[in-house]
Image (cartoon, rainbow, N blue to C red):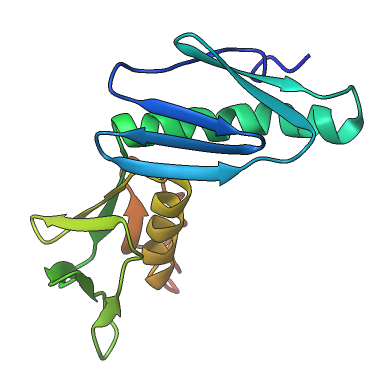
Length: 179
C-alpha cells in the first residue's frame, strides 16, 4: 500500500469539495480548481476528510494511487492557502520589474526579456532582484518559475543568473594563469 496514498486529506473550514465520478472540484477563498482523475483510483469524501483508494491492485492503480492523493491535496491547499515560489537574480546590472501583468528581465542580453505569466499567476518583484510567483495551482506556479529561471540559469564560474531562493550553485575554479 502506498504510504502517501493511504493518508487522508483534511478539508479546511472554508473549502468545499464536490466529487462527481472521477471529476474532483475544490472551491475555497482563493479560487476554484477541478481535475479529472484516472479510472484506477476512487475518491470518496467522508466527513471532513477525503480518501483516495485504488480500484484494484494492478500496476497502473498502484502507480497512480499516491500521485492522485497528492494532486487532490495540492488542490485543497491551493484554494485555501495558495502556493509561492521565490527566485533570486544575481549579477551586476541584472534586475527585474513588473509592467502591468508582464515581468521584464534585464539579465545581460542586448534586449530585455518580457515574460507574460499564465492566467491565475501573479508575479511580484522585491528590491529589483527577488521575484515572487504566486497562484493557486502548484503545477503552473512551478512551471512558470522554471521558465523564468531558464531565461538565464546560474552559471558555475561567477554564479550569475536567476536561481531559486536557497538554491546552492556548485562553483568551478576558473582558468589559472601561466607562471
